[in-house]
Length: 127
Image (cartoon, rainbow, N blue to C red):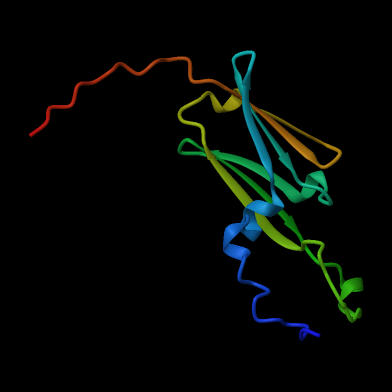
């Protein structure tokens, strides 16, 4: 029989998602001239989530404090997440007042207008 903390328990951790990205799975897609971001944030309330846009980056932050009721428990295993998780996406220069977000059934949906201007191609001289 193997001990509870077998030495290979964490051996495969590097081959799978990190703890941070595993907690907030996101889909990013384009539809109808908008870029849509859908983030799974189960177990959080709308008041626990913030969405900010700064210097071309869209940041989603979710913070959930562990309630005092949990402190007296002697956990055998605890898999539900408490604390803060965050995801950042580069969205470029967009009209920030046109970004829309909604949260329902543990899914945050954000719609970002696509950058309307195309950047001209610039030839780089090779030295």
